[in-house]
Image 1: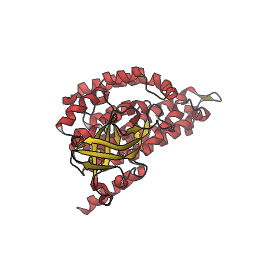
Image 2: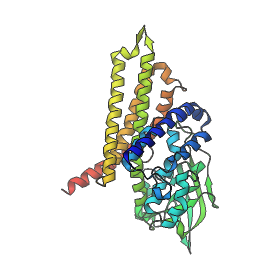
Image 3: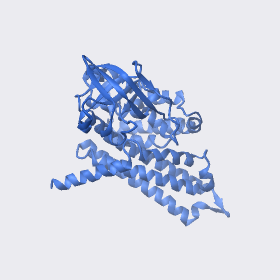
Image 4: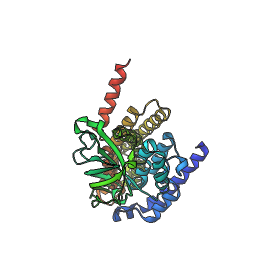
Length: 382
């Protein structure tokens, strides 16, 4: 996309966030749902397909463009981004990178238009950040596969039309090598989506358990090559981690602005608290860390686009930015004092929302492991 055209897209999305989504934040929190008017506005703007190829109705953004967009979207409730995040990210990218032409033609236009919602069904009760313990099975039966298993914490599952289901087609002893991925329609017999989970934060963004009991799908539902599902998962997750890092930057910037605004409005003993040096120190730390996160994400996205690093950079960006936004949220609550601890304050809400970023799409501990392994591998080849 031409830079001028993309700048116009950013400006339009920024206006949507500030004029439509931010005013709806209290409603989203109280109802635990995204209003239809907000969903429709996002779909009309193409946000359900910004990372999907243009030939299927998406915007086809590069990673460098995507992270800048995510920083804008990140300035409001994370539920807004989550609404279309799986279509563009971890679920949609499985089809973009590994799907057959027929699968792409069948599903991507609907995903890009917001007419379909896809979920990424990898996590299980005993297999989270490490998928080697995955127990869901897909057994070949003639021209079909029969899938049985349980999935947990699946984002957007209550709204999903499609599931990217990761299942073991090989023996457990094969570890990650015997994992395949299938497109599964949620209307199929044997697919049961449980009630939405009651979470600490991120109200309006729903996760749920998914049960698959003898679900029969045709061989044409296999995405890519049998046994290469783990590769598809890791490629999608690497891209998603960069996106999460960028989202955390946007939220950190919003939190910093909220803290600054409060410090300018609130007085103690007739003096603005913004004039107290200890408050200034917290504000300065918030701004500095957010700037550092922004720079890290932009550089990691550049390396992702040119192909020089699609492993270490995304993990480093996700690790630093998800940890960073928690620190910024904590300071923002501190600047607000007792008001910041009230449940209906924006910084209290964002404090609870931010905590999830260190857990999903790979915990901070997993990111550290990936980073270290890449460092060691790089040193060993010199």
